[in-house]
Image (cartoon, rainbow, N blue to C red):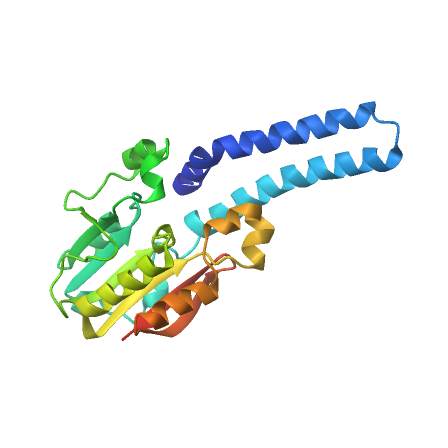
Length: 244
């Protein structure tokens, strides 16, 4: 429940607003004479509450009860015991690097925080850093400038991070940089929620926070890379395995 609690913390104002609007609508229904409007207001108030509950349940399934941060989907694709250099990219929120280092102590892991991402300004970010302390070796990066030598990295991991690169051209530049630093047989692992029907159904307008499948395909292909595989992690998120 750790990450779901953080989701609530980051979105408590929206959740509170939804609850207040629902209560107001339900209360107003008692002062209306039209049966149609009474039904409309009450149904709408119930739908708002159900949507809040659905989004929190979906968040729990995705963040606390799935393979998102376990990376078991990569068995048979990446042998961590034989992997040397790995870059982990996040956006001011890192629940993964500690477990990776504990499981694979010989891994040369570089943890990178995307400089200037939206989470840096959120009120709950300090609380999240208390729950998941930043890696002491963490460095700040700009999407268009990765501080690594050509063909030096075996794997680049980006778990729910790259959608924080808001500009399409900057995303393309990130993938071009990733291609430059990646070894010929290296992989880029991108795990993200898509802007699709399922996420609209459970997260409502929150789905606009994510990118569509076509947007990811476009950025990756324009960088001269290809999606070798698209794995479904949960109904709400996909793992893209990208190669040169």
